Amino acid sequence: MKTSAAIILASVCSASAFMVPTVSQKSSTSLYATATKGKVSKVKTSISNITIDSFSSTLTEIEPFLTKDAGNSIYKKSMQRINAKAKMLGVEVPAGYAKEAKCTEKRREKQDSYCKAKAEEAAAAAEEEAPAEEETVSEEAPADE
Image 1 (tube, rainbow, N blue to C red):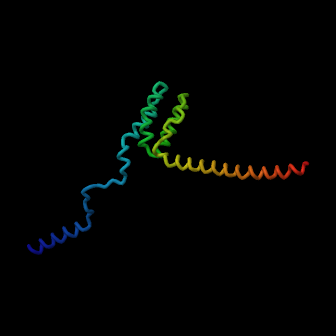
Image 2: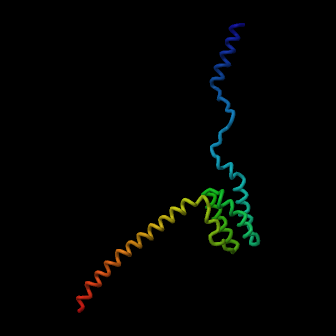
């Protein structure tokens, strides 16, 4: 009896050593996906169901999601869908629609700083050219007399 109990106990212990331990709580790898879950599909269906009559009202409904919650890829795809639908319906998307999106903020800041730097470089180059031109004009003037 003792030996059979020992054998059973040893077999149960050895079998449980190869089993995967149960995890009490599953960890989420994507926290942001749960915040926008369900909203993306609603936006996609509302874009696909746009008509000429409901175009402006649908755009006003979608804009808060695009400017605040949408990620970069969802924003780009949604804007492409809206532009394609507008072209198909013969309607124009308002200028500057959803341009202040949160997902494009860093890119806009980077582009603005690049444009400012280029403008400053052009102004500095123009200032350097102006004195050089004045010197050449003043050198040529006495030669004419």
